[in-house]
Length: 471
Ligand code: NMX
Ligand code: MLT
Image 1 (cartoon, rainbow, N blue to C red):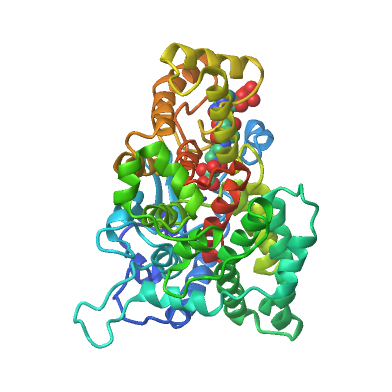
Image 2 (image 1 turned 45 degrees about the vertical axis):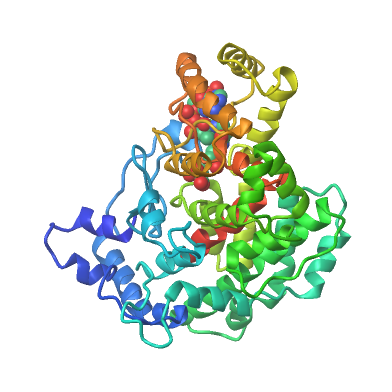
């Protein structure tokens, strides 16, 4: 994938007025209305694209080999993607910021806490890090908080969507349920209605923005309803107006009361996971985990299946509900997002066979047995990355801070010791290191979210932020 900036750099001598043309990272304003911030940028962005086409249109980006075509466009730069950039060695950057930088710079719900996805959404859509009014004017202006409010206002899900979910076959996979619910929402698409009414193409972005925000706002409620219907008898939990977007997702999935971390410490880690499970997901640690989870899964450039599929379908001017559903059907594949479910399934097989105190030798045997039976080791490898995924490292850091003695965390750390060597010995795996999915299930399990078939839905809710921001 390429950003317009990189494409322009390729076809122009360096030193020309790139920044002016690109228009990103410019002077910060204190606009807190996301749509107004977008409206201020869009005409410049439209002009930039026109210029890119005029100047670079005929330029070839490279050759395409038979191997790449068989590999499904492997390594072929074929889509413009500006919200994030994936470097094989370093990993992902969101609008130029690495994952550790995001952890440091994005606003959090509490002092020194995990980043909130609303801040990331502002960054992805506008290209600028959200700011807080340092002058402490009354009232304090905070762009990420304004996004929280915007999403809260639009979070109500129409009854007919819940009815669609309730009427599905009880064995319907949570990812299939997610797709059906999003398609049921499509009846309210503003873009589809405006297109029918003959909107001018220069204005497409407005109803696309409206649909995208409406959809993102409703996804936590939809995901929680899928969870409650599938695993908790179907009784739904109202959103808490005091909570932010990701914390509300956690709250609506469970949420019967708060468990203090002192109580959790007293009863020990296994007991903690169990108590958290019984009490619901309002534990402060769980809310923080969900904020981080929803931030780091949002975007991974345009070459992955969910991003590519969303944009491929969107290029037919299918509205955001239709195109996001296409992305989610791709995320539901075991080599893509479903790998987070597969990792847990696989770890549980290991535990069932050898217990929690698995030795390095036993683990090696298990990995070899998996490979010899013609299966992949889930959570390892990547089409682009050639190093450990920084999203894995970030989650491992969260685990080290919050659940250092949790047996499953130790098991995953043991995998890190064992798997890469073995994958290298196969002589064919290009990246033997763990990806994002190797660690996410451990965090969810610790807080009692043990139903692994649901995990990809949580990935999907986050992915909406990235693929819909690219627009
Ligand atoms: N376990 C076993 N074999 C593997 C693995 C693995 N983890 N990773 C790659 N290989 C094999 C791959 O199947 C291929 O074999 P063959 O030639 O027999 O078809 C060979 O190694 C070369 O593949 P690569 O070029 O290294 O990887 P590719 O780009 O084709 O695929 C993945 C990338 C991510 C699909 C692959 O590494 C994989 O299947 N990993 C396990 C599933 C997984 O964790 N997916 C999640 C990815 C992240 N996400 O969230 O989407
Ligand atoms: C993703 O987050 O989309 C995955 O790591 C897959 C990819 O980038 O190819």
